[in-house]
Amino acid sequence: MNVLRPLLLAPVYRDYIWGGSRIHSHFGRTSIPARCAESWEVADRPEGQSVVSGGPFDGYTLGKLVNELGALLLGARGMSERFPLLIKLIDARETLSVQVHPNNENAHRTGGEPKTEMWYILAADPGACIYAGFKPGATPDTFRAALKEGTVEALLNKLPVKAGDAVYMPGGRVHAIGAGCLILECQQNSNTTYRLYDWGRVDAEGRPRELHIESALQVINWGEPPTELARPIRLAAGRRNARWEIVQSPFFRMRRLDMLEPEVLGAEPSSFRVLFVAEGSVAVTQPGYEQILVSGQTLLIPAACAELTLVPVGGLATVMLMGQP
Image (tube, rainbow, N blue to C red):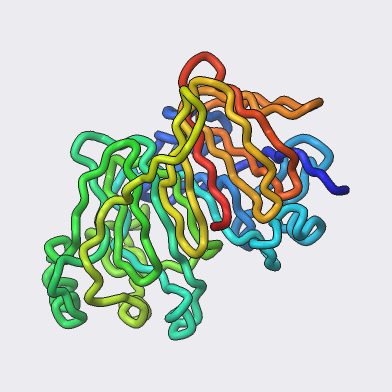
């Protein structure tokens, strides 16, 4: 097999205690938990595997596809024993814990997996924010003192956010997603999180969640400059369409395509791509193939996929494209 069609994947849902119902209400999804914190759109994890829905690979897990297809799926840039990225939707009904992930340089200190990520804000309540890094002057000692006194928030860099904003979050940077944010997350394939502070929250049995303070302190990058929102770069596109480079990192890239007319998506044999429809509806077409995607749907485009045409259906459509840099 030399050419592959795009692949629809069934999401994996997570019902963490800070989640809400926005993934259901915003995207009209059914068969979803009443409380849904995360939807793992593209996942190759022991804790959760995306499964192909329809087509010749119907029922295959993403891990099985990686093992059987290799470079045909991943491309030369992405060759690995598992899918290199994890793509999620996150609904923060409540503010998430203050946390940190290791990076490639320090993950060995704690035995965790490195995790650099980025967030694209799909929707945000008025006054919504994220916490990204520390204010200048924070040290391990001042942070320990703030933990004891319950004043951690005063040390954190707080950024107001709205729909269309994005932030790059390298491993080693302390952060938290604020309440009222609906987010598309692209990250390294990792599930290592060290929780530092949980706002006094308890679970259904009245117990606080576990903290990982000593591990976290081993991987925090102290003394970083203040975090800022990403600055998208306008790229060439069609006369009525707009392409934007949202983030490009050593691990992934994210682009946005705002379409009022058809757009050709050329073949890209060096890397897979993940297409997420953020707004509107899109017909994805090839000779002998058509797939209509509505807002909130995700499509995995293998590296060995031929040229595609994206056609907006019924007006403006916005799609996010993610893959290897």
